[in-house]
Image (cartoon, rainbow, N blue to C red; front, side):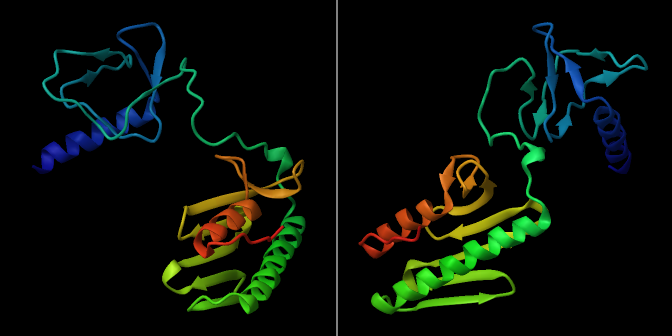
Length: 195
């Protein structure tokens, strides 16, 4: 058993060094994307070519991606030139969180929801809504993002959009305040204005 494990580890190490594998069906290349590739019946010679005898079993933790694919799913690319400087990030994030805290505290004074509580500490804003769930909004300084945990939509990461002058979720282009207004409106059964 130990020798089989060592052999698999050696093969995996060799495969990790080579990120591209020629496709047998075309001249394009297939690329691993953080995937573990284990094909015990394939061998690699010193010239990095792959011999493929008929396989009885092949295991992939995720599918290989075709470089020539026009698949556009996933988050938009990050333009690193547009990342905020640390001081600017903290200023914008703190302003957003404190404004949101004030508006939610005002709203909490007018609404009758059991368990409604707002807490801000250690740069984390927590909004408890009793049986309706809990929202958590916090800064992620290394990424220059605001992270939201929502009882409705789950986790989201918002980046500052210079053009929109708002925190935007890159996958859906949703505005942080609009997301909160929409979700809380659904939970409370009445519209709420946070922007």
